Length: 376
Image (cartoon, rainbow, N blue to C red; front, top):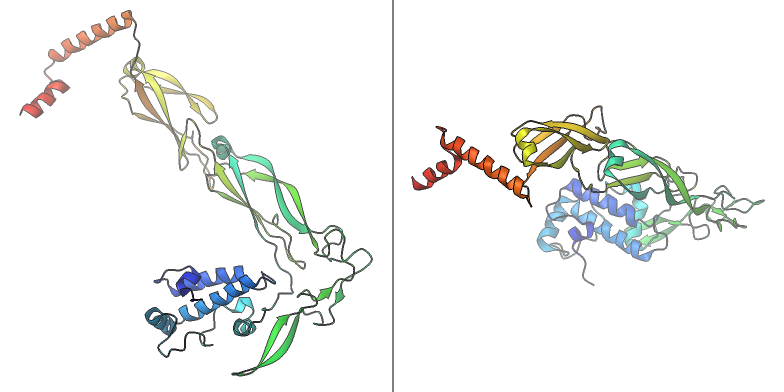
């Protein structure tokens, strides 16, 4: 089977910087490392492929040669050599994992405390809740430490025993002759599977895993001013840690539902209010909706359609400080329809008076100005 392009393996572009390559490698290595995927041969193969790509692309000379000749270098030997291993491997097990990549080892399993996994959940709220905040209980399924055995994995009256094969380290070492000399490798203990302890009588509740899955009701306090895409972190509300490690965190992603009246721009609100021709012409005091009730807004006579009025402090509170946004009200003058005879008569009279006023004025009307512009 042909090898995949190294840039494709790491998910970076061909002009990626060294830092971008290192960042992509670390992310993928954490995901496919044998410690995180015990017994998963597919993950192990991907981990080897990722390491091989990183070895080449993090070395300027090898990368230049790869960019020019592909998977076979100028000497026809490929890129399978040991040179170039360095930064990026320390947090994944060191030199033992490097040789494992070539000799098929399973990698070293961590035996100390490990932090539990983080959890993500999504919450949909209204625009009003986003503005003023709310408190809500949500159900979160998560892995917790077994309450029966306290995470020891052993049944009541018994306790874990130190593994006689690895002596409690969770690892065994053996040597192997290679073309480079005699190499000492470290592998996960087959008997205790890296735990360092063996359980003669497993806990019946968790079946010897030390953890159980439960659904918990967790209270979420959404602060005023959150926006669509805001993320809330609840420390320690994630999944239980391993071997006495701390629990992970719970991340709540906020989704704000669209509002039928208001549009949000930052911390400001925008709405459109219809007014009649007479209200716009004569002026009026309007009752307009806000997120916390109704408010009065005075519009002056002669207001034109599209005019925007600002209502200070009627917007969204600033989430990271004091103060509040504003509400902007756009006026839309509505043309009347289905007039009765009396209304039509009054409008005709208004039109006649308006025409007389324009003809008697020294200023040209709009239509006269347009006629002059086109006729020259």
